[in-house]
Image 1: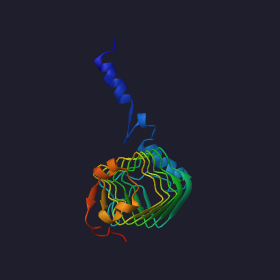
Image 2: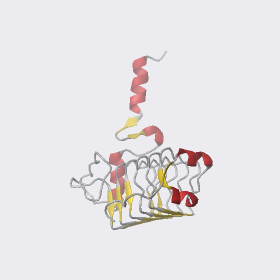
Image 3: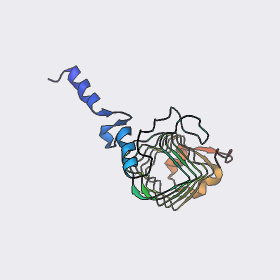
Image 4: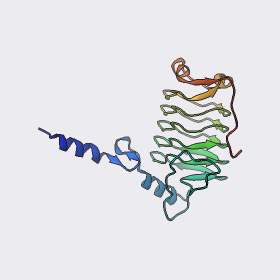
Length: 197
């Protein structure tokens, strides 16, 4: 018979810093090293993870950040990089499948042919960006803010849209099921623009 202590040890062994091994995702450290190896972030000391969703005018040291750059033709799947910052960039033909991008800022960007399937985007800010042929299938977008963004030929099959924020004006452009629409938090207007525009 397995003891209670053994069960606890087994469960704890599944955990990794900022990630859970059962998801198949790399932990934060390994994810940052992958980005450095691909030449997408500066080599050297790993960036600290911010203690809040990053803003364009944060005064502290940045975490994982992509600003005024192009990221294209690369596989960034199964990474754990919550609270990342994307600003004024083009992200093209990139896969973030099964990656943790929770509480990230993705404002004022062009996302073209990007795969966010099975990714975690909870409480992320996706405002004021253009999404073209982007796959959000089975992604977790709970609490994400989609206002002021356009979605062209995108897919949301099986995505969790619980309390995701969008404007009534966006309803026609978001290809959601009736169940997903009922999960959403629809607003009368687009609200204020995010900073950094």
